[in-house]
Length: 162
Image (tube, rainbow, N blue to C red; front, side, top):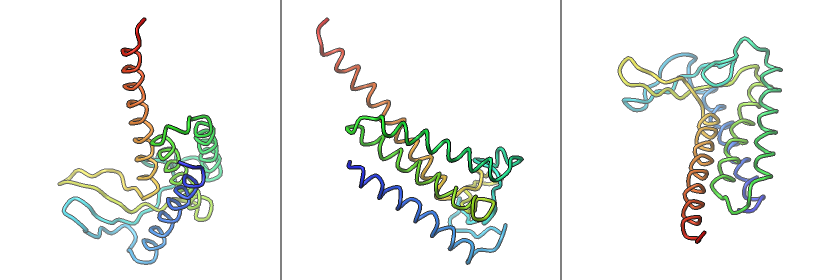
């Protein structure tokens, strides 16, 4: 994938995240479940921390700085990853897009808008948003590509005589 395509993927992730959050802010009541499927509700809430509300005791600026450092690290990893590792590049693009989408909320609003609630019976998962999904899927792509690369390397090593 070219860098341009990857940057477009980052922009699409940010755009979809921000559009979804705008719709949520203008359409959903605060902290009231809106059923979508038997296991899925929309539930607008605000997260002042990071994933699963961790570090919510830190100031917005410290969390924003932490996000910027993480994005910088991912960009460094991305720039040092071989171009033939397409899944990894897609993963990094999704991680950066998701992190920047949440950073927009944190810097403009002082919190992140979350609205997706997965549940079953009395069990429920933490409320999250599209940016969080992009980060998770992106990390999954990076991990999957690493596993596939390990398998390719083992196969190549077995094919070469000592």
